[in-house]
Length: 288
Image (cartoon, one colour):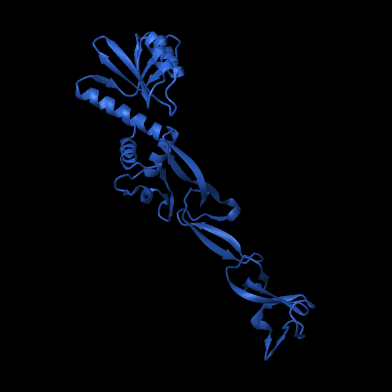
């Protein structure tokens, strides 16, 4: 793993036995996974990038559990909501209880209909006696002080606090909010690669991690690591399978070794190799 912090996080996941990493919405950072892992930003300043890297490597599996609205101009999640009148775009609005007078089709806040002990329409002057016959009531609607109109709901405008851009709800970008599942068998591979590499280096062995070589086919063949001793180089692949590493992985390694004219190689199987794979590997001069 290229990133030092990614290696540190893999070790942490193994040590704590983490199965899932839950997201938490955070105004400063948009989404935070620090609380789920019990770590600080000082330890892992670029945690979100590391999680994306580990997902790309197949060590984590992201599942969408929601969305985060963001600015389409700069990508910021720091949005300020403004409520406007949907008729005249004025911000001078308030939430009211409204009355609709059926006969003259006039609608206004209910306090405008009060006239002593009875309700009277301020538009036509008629008294309102029976709800559902003379008038209807609406709760929590929007009244605009500018155009004096009543609306069911306000117009929503979002202002980005980072770049100042204004946008409607339909113009917002919706980024996925992910929960990560740890794929345990995939988690072991990079940790084991690093442990083998560091152990060999402590013994003074020259190690390439990862390793690659151009074959006779012209293709670049990639291996988990390789060790060099004298004029020879030994290539090692570390593979995993929850059901046991099978013959196809042995054949894949043999094909790469044949292409680069290497004499034998090593296959490290996580958690184990099948008996068929072991038999085939022995016949192809591959150690398991």
